[in-house]
Length: 352
Image 1 (tube, helix red, strand yellow):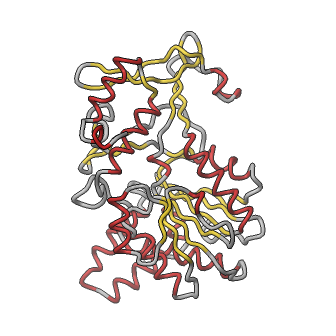
Image 2: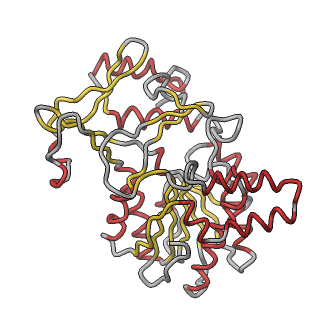
Image 3: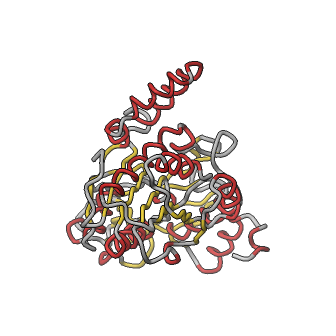
């Protein structure tokens, strides 16, 4: 969209588009909304709309850095090696991870995949020496890649298909008074539904994320060609599920996704059950998909929390509260998953 369009409320643009050309797909609605949202602000932290794991505690990034150093050392310490982070937020995770990895000799070239100029400015202060990219295509094609994507896939637009009396249809967005709403489209979409899932009760919704599938496919290809390993960390499920998981967050509260598009963070649960086979289809090694709490415990977050508390006793309560938030089953520990991938010749990663 042009600069002049940027100044106009996205809801107004959508209403005009729908009036002129008919309903738009939910995927179009979510994609445009998030493009506007992320290009216009720093959404992170207490003053923003949500907080991610790296902002909760340095332990999160440090353990990721140790994981990367460990697998790189056991793979033979090949150089040059590239640290690639998708959607690096404020650069907090990268700063913590790279500081921890450096202690074990891992000093990679740093590549941040970030489209938002607002966030690039914040990252520049946190990680001097980083190189920025709009997508993976400009990452160097030589040397192993160590890829990290924390809460990146959940913001990619989803397509929703709904079973109607006439078969599968795509869910479309219409303007309805002050807000927007979903309805079934007219175009038959049965061919887009996997054969095993085509028979379903009317009203059943299937959610797919083409962007997440394409990202994992591309990362897996890089691992095959160049060597390396990847961690995808996000909230989602590791078994196939039906139903809509679309949600919106603003000022740390869940809000209606169909009001004020472009002013809230729209996300959907990541379907890890579909993504693992996509990576494997390229010959990539799937290390596993496990709950974040279990993975962090396996990497030693309890011992790290004790060590930090001993160094700074006045912060002990806050350190343990942060750890509990990361690993607690009722908090981030169970809902968030960690999916690991590696080149076929690389060793298995810790924690899976």
